Length: 374
Ligand SMILES: Cc1cc2nc3c(=O)[nH]c(=O)nc-3n(C[C@H](O)[C@H](O)[C@H](O)COP(=O)(O)OP(=O)(O)OC[C@H]3O[C@@H](n4cnc5c(N)ncnc54)[C@H](O)[C@@H]3O)c2cc1C
Image 1: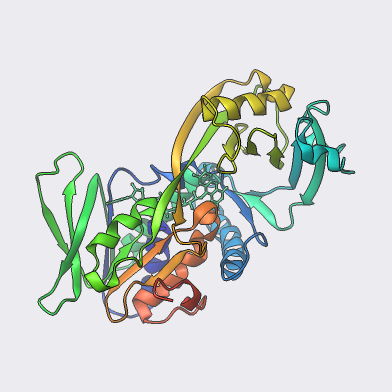
Image 2: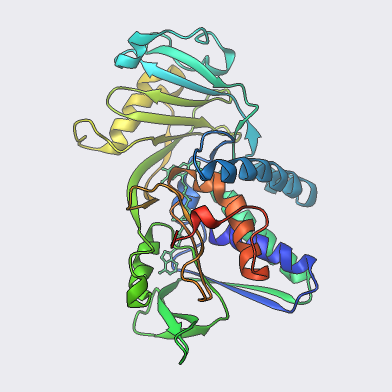
């Protein structure tokens, strides 16, 4: 979210004749070190509901435009690394799943999922032919957002972006009048070295850790940043054979898997649910076993990496992300709580928040349904 906001803030500032803008990005570790570098990168135009529906529709189209922009302005290797492409999407159930017994879809012979073994995967149903589902590779995407912002800022006389990695934000600075006036932080490598950064506006985009900033709010505003983390596991396989482009949501009885072959030939796999089944000894191994058992093409594929990270979730029952001003009349903003759709919804979130911070009004989206104080 921080990179998407920075990208759109720079684009807006560079295109307008308003005063100088300096953006400082403070990142505790490194850009894309958390969910934004480890996610699946699946994009669906119509799968979000409620207020997030318009966020998803707008973002889906903006992803295509961003990828086209990078393809037109950067070396082919950079555009290729983004891994943006549309792809068909299938729902499947392993032979062991009760879902499989309900139907065997007419799509079982679809070429795009020829890499799923028919004796292991009992039902397959095409949910989208690729018109409204797509993918992007999250780590290069997140980094491209920031790199693009820095390049644009370098070309714009009144805009500047500074990235400080290894900078852990620890609190908010307040003016004598009680207004947010910056942040306190310390180098991640040296917690005893307290630093301050004065700022006219502060945007909190700390993913699952945004909930920690709730303690930094004035007492009567506490509880607004109800964000926490939900653990999720993923791994990347490097098959020797070509695996056709198809997003597969596999109900395997013991675990739900999401399988995304990527344009670079690798295959990304993550668990798509909070386990309600028996606690596995190893969630990563369970995921890996299920995927290998469902596809001969993946059975012996070397695993190049595996990750555990956190989905940023709202702790209230409200699954709507927080986007906007945290407290009326305070120059403090938030973009967090996007759960399993943060890569998709980063685009419209970043643009709408940049509009709000820079011009006082979000034009792309009505942000009222996402306001922390709604
Ligand atoms: C396994 C998995 C699969 C997913 N698949 C998809 C998918 O297919 N499609 C999709 O749209 N979404 C997907 N998501 C969701 C998506 O990844 C997240 O919603 C999104 O990346 C969240 O972005 P964020 O910027 O809010 O948080 P993060 O990516 O977690 O970034 C927060 C950043 O804040 C930094 N930070 C935290 N505290 C501080 C501090 N005090 N000071 C300085 N920096 C700090 C962290 O180091 C981190 O870099 C998936 C998520 C997971 C976990």
